[in-house]
Image (cartoon, rainbow, N blue to C red; front, side, top):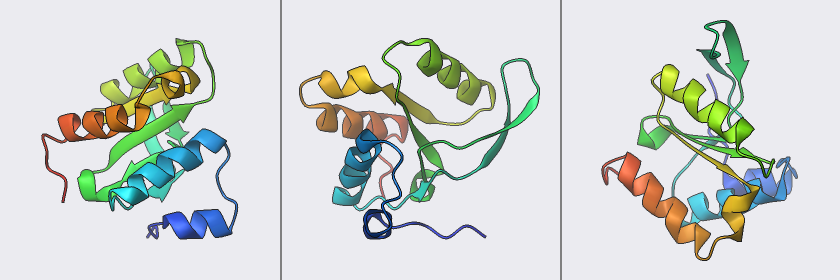
Length: 122
């Protein structure tokens, strides 16, 4: 069984691969949304081959909502991941580096979480 990783544990262990993932973790922690960082997730790629993905964050209290960060500026990786999660019937928000250049990205991400979960934050 996977143990939910707290924000403090990740900071203490310097566990984030990308600095923007740390910023996302801070936002999730601010809203008391516990998560599992880089949880291996079995799914099928777009060619229906089995694969293991490791999305940045899986929020178990929100029916395993995925928030995945792609470090690329282009949208190819982001679009691929969105389609793959959709094909596997997984709720996901996929963001890339350009997302962080927007004003009030934190409010937008939290709004997107609320929207996808129909306000079922608990």
